[in-house]
Amino acid sequence: MKEERVKKILSLLEKAYPDAKLVLHYNNPLELLIATILAAQCTDERVNKVTETLFKKCKTAQDYASAEQDVFEQEIRSTGFYKNKAKNIIACGKELVERFDGKVPDTMEDLVTLPGVGRKTASVLLGNIFGKQAVAVDTHVFRVSHRLELAKANDPDKVEQELCKIIPQEKWTRSCLVVGTHGRRTCIARKPLCNVCVVEKLCHSPDKIYSSRQE
Ligand code: SF4
Image (cartoon, rainbow, N blue to C red):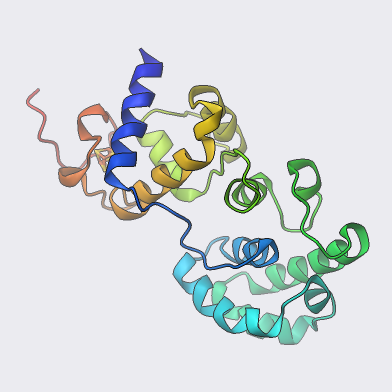
């Protein structure tokens, strides 16, 4: 039953958002890595504005490694938590140069050893630029997974494990993109647009603010 329900939800979401893709702008693994670190606690749109300039100045891991903390902080200031992000990105650049020949590694094991890189960031990279299957639990995937009872855990890494169990592996990356897009466009945090939601009939969330169900 649960398998069928998950299949139905994912199929409806796929049909609703055939254009689902990452909102972050990037052209290579390094750019996606930096953009994803900057996206913590910040909108992707804001990050895109910052990286439009940043990526013209910083093109290699060495560019980040040799950036001056004060200058770099100002460059990314509008993304919030800029002191910590600047520290992590500069340290990340150094690690990439010292341990990975300036390249972004393509395994979860290596990625999570980089400063500022958790499982979510690593999964975004694995799934979207390295062609692997990975479940990236960002704030939107987390919220929608809870509302649709796909996951119960309060910790994103545990939600990742729950989703990995109920979604077929060949669909991990794509499913996160459509679920995340549903969260951005319809199942919005404060005021979900339940009256236009394609999975409304399958949703029993207390967050529903409108229902057309006759019950
Ligand atoms: S019915 Fe509302 S709360 Fe439920 S998934 Fe749809 S938009 Fe989200």
